[in-house]
Image 1 (cartoon, rainbow, N blue to C red):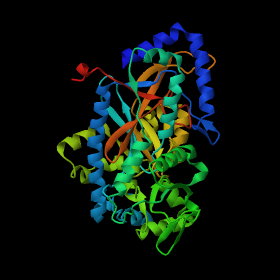
Image 2 (cartoon, one colour):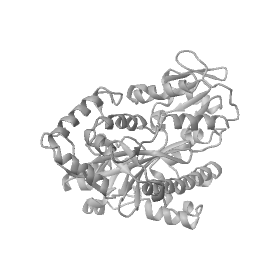
Image 3 (tube, rainbow, N blue to C red):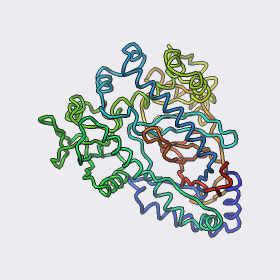
Amino acid sequence: MKEIRHQYETLIKQNFEANRKNALEIKNYLEHSSVAYHGRCVHTLHIPKVFTQKEIRRFQEIVSVTYGIFEKVIREYLRNPEYRKSFPFSPELEELILVPNLYDSVLPIARFDIFFDEDTFDFKFCEINTDGTSAMNEDFVLNQAIRLNITHQEMAESHTFRSYELFDTWVETMLKLYRTYEKAVEKPYIAIVDFLEHCSITEFEEFQRRFERAGYACEICEITELTYRDHTLYSPSGRPIDLVYRRAVTTDVMQHYEEVQPFIEAVKHQDVCVMGSFCTQIIHNKWLFKLLHEEQTLALLTEEERAFVRAHVPYTNLLDERHCNKEEILNTKDRWIIKPLDSYASRGVFAGVDDTPQEWKEHVEEYWGKDYIYQEYCTPYRTDNIYFVDPNAQFKPYSNMSGLFVYNGQFAGVYSRLSDGGIISSQYNEKAVATLVLEEESHDET
């Protein structure tokens, strides 16, 4: 990986002004593509993230072990009332989590975001995304845009790269799981369901095209406009829904609980197949990282899995007087990051390394005792890259985060994000790059 990055960097420096002009052309391409919506657009750097087969095998291993642990946690929650008491879920949410989904998976789709050390192959988890797992379209469009990159064009003359296909593979996985559903029909009418005001609508439209290409009618639905009568959930257009691809995150559903009662009632009565069901919230909620380190969870795991948790899951606890000493948190700011217990898109996340002592104190005071966690800060692996949109563009180190897409327990691809700060967040200075895999000659794959 280092050698590949060095080759990109050398070629860019040899033809710097042409690459600057080219990067602005790519920016214009992205701004007129499907990754521009709701007044924002993905920002990218000029060197893609290129993995070799060695890294991919490591990612497959990480996914396999992690998924096995998560399955055990979910199933223990579903079967053990005492274990359930350890989770911070309301009675209403617990009721939804316990509704059997009637198909052969408790975690159909996820993205495991990790800080991966490209030198040692060690890593730490950042967070787990289940309901609402996204960014397939960003990766898709960035891999189209990279073809316009003149340095990448030159690299492709001497190297063979491939990208991951994240749409059709999910369509195939979802439909395969649906065929295990106890009430499956031959040709289900599919609804992609979310609060459309702030969703990734262009991503939904691409999924809709892929479902239709596979031979299935599909509608993008505003969750608050669904109706339910006579044991049938209806779309806003009046079509009976057989299969829901749920993109509405649980936090939003529970915040708008009364507004989405038709959907809730259909779920409670098991009158629609929901991919994924609410039991995925057990893994999505950041409380998981705290519980993974506790004996009641470790007792479910093999010795290998316990060692895996201790090595890779950062210490996590509630930011309140019951679980930490405020002065210690304030005096050791660079050790910690604080996050909402249940949120997404890096909203309200603050890293001590990015704050002055005064800023850190203000953030800790503001969110103290307000369903926030404090978590061990993991220094991300840094690689040099360049953002030509800056007037004084130059190569500098960027923090890396790899989002491992997981389709029914199988590694499916990577979403690569970088930042020149301590937090990698779309709210701040996040950049995304195309993810590529360097194809090796057969004699090298040993």
